[in-house]
Length: 202
Image (cartoon, rainbow, N blue to C red; front, side, top):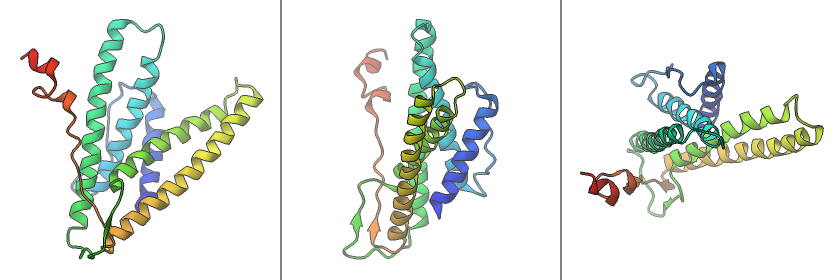
């Protein structure tokens, strides 16, 4: 099952990141793109999400220096673009993987592609990791930890449901019962020509 391996890789990424717990640490992907292209992309995807998760923590510091905040905002913008690109690479992998499937005449399209489901699974892994931390915080009240534990249980249930839905979608695609398309995000605000502010600076 793709979701089982994805969840394993996401856990691997998050635990590896928190050894140093620094947004400035080096990125080392243990999966070679020519040998394990999907695993390589899944690892990269979750690493991007994990670093950005901590960018978002830092930028919410009410005492952050405005100049530092601007630099960080640029990093978040770049990270968002990298995240989107990686999701599209994952979908391109699935498109190629299932390119020879005989799609049935009554096949249906899904509301989201497999990779965007996997994107949500990666974010969910981060929520689970950090909610587990909150549930175990030594300096938190018993009430706070109990509420965090309740939230954690909901997140864990959500992961089961989302994992099942992703695997079912991929199975349906493999049988030709559903088909997929990839619509490039075409983010206009990153484009030198489409963003009027950037265009005016040229």
